[in-house]
Length: 445
Image 1: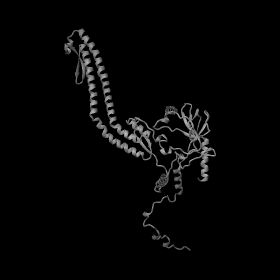
Image 2: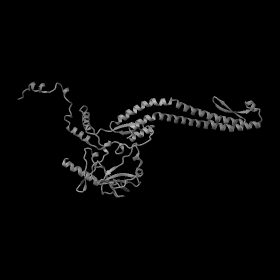
Image 3: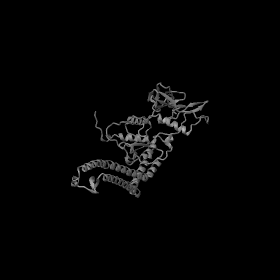
Image 4: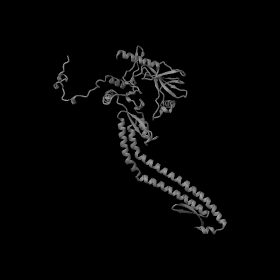
C-alpha cells in the first residue's frame, strides 16, 4: 500500500548552533578540489616531472576550478623549490631586430632594470649638456672652418691656374663657372667673337681642360672633404658623448661585474672595459647559484681503499655522481671537441670505437658517438695531503686554456644563444649511480 510522505521528511534540518561560525565567509578556503582526486593526483604528478618536453593540459567545463587547482598545486610546489632565475631582455646592438635575453640570479633582474631606468634618466640630461658645451661647439666650429678654408684654398689655386690660361673663375650664388679673360677683365660674347680665330680656338681648348678639372674639384673633391668633415664631427660628438656618459655606464657595469653578458651588453653600449676580473660565475653556470659550485664527497676511505658514495636529492640535477672519476674529452674527425665523458677511474674510451654516452640525470636518454680521439682532462696533483705534481706556471696555464678553447666550435663559445655542449656519463658510472638509488629506495633512507 502506498502512503504519502510527510513534508517534514523531505528536508533535512540542521541546528545552526552546531556550526562554529557565523557565515561561510568566516571559513578558510578549501585546500583541495572536492570530488576530483584523480585530477589532483594527475596534476601533482605532472608538476613533479623535472625534464623538459612535458606539458600539462587541463580540460573540462568552465567554472569547475581548473585554474584554481593548477594555481594551488603550483604555488605549493613553488614553496619547496629554489627561487627561479630572472630573465631580462636587452637591446641587441649588433642586430636591433633581435633583443638579447640575459639570465640573472633571482632579484638581480629587478635591480638591473631599475638601474638601467635610472641610467636612462641620467643620460637624457648628460648627453644634451655635452653637446651644448663650449668644448663641443669649439671643436665643431674648428672642423667646419677648416673645411671652408680648404675649399677656399682649392678655389684660389684653381683661379690662378685659370688666369694663367686666360680664363676667369666666376663665383655666383648658384655655383662657379668659367669665362674668357683679357687684361684682367672678363670678355662678353661679342668681345670673344671679335678675337682672332686662333685665339678663340686656344680659349676653347683651355676652357675644356679647365672645366674638366673644375668638375672634378666641385663634384668629387668637395663632397669627399664634406664627408670627411661630417665623419670627424660625428666622431667628435661620439667622443664627447662617451666622456659624458662613460662613467655613468661604468657605474652600472661595476654593479654587475660578475655577469659577463651584462658586461658585454654595457661594453657594446659604449662602456670602456679596462680590466676583467674573476667572479663567482667562473665556478658555475649562468643559471646556477654560485653556492652550487663547491666540492661534493664522491668516495670514502674504508679498509684501505676508496669506496664510492653519493649525495641524494629530490632534484635529479643535484644528485652527485659516485666514485673516483676521470673526465675524457672526445674529439671528432674535424679535430673539434664533440662531448665530454665522465667515467669511473680505470675506464678508457677507445678512439675509433663506438661509445655510449648517458645523460647525467635523465638516465633513459643516451647518444652514440665514435670519437676520433679521446683525451683525459684530470690529473692528480695532491695525495695524502702532499702535492704530488709540479704545477704549471701562469703562462703555461694560459696557453693550455687557449689551446683547449681553440678545440671548440665557435657555436659553443658565443655569448648569444650558444649551443649546449654535451657532458655525459659512462655506462658503468650510470649503473653504479642507479644501484645506489635503488638501494636507497629499498632501504628508505
